[in-house]
Length: 118
Image (tube, rainbow, N blue to C red; front, top):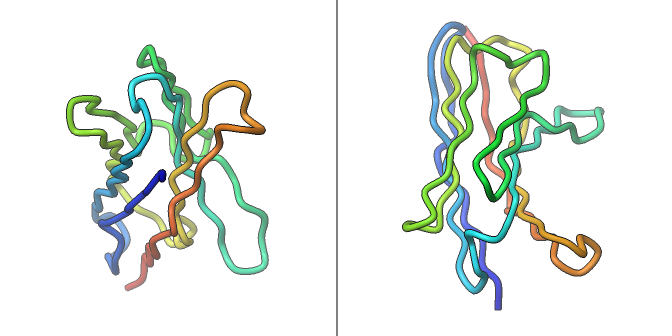
């Protein structure tokens, strides 16, 4: 059974930093591509950052230069370091792990709240 555990959300002031982590078990972690999505109230879930099994990364334009995605295959864990946080970064953040065929191998975390507020 595949288990995903997210941690690290919370409340931070604008300009501050937070780190998220997503640990998975029950899968061959190194074979998976993975990403972080966020969903603000009343809005669709959007991709924030992604990292392939080979370590290539891509970011939404809104977070480039501020967020860093990484992975540690030895720990079965993916990370998102968020710096220079803005009010508009407030959302529930979800980790997502997938490999082809994605219809069969696609797993979501439970979500963690990130609130940026003064």
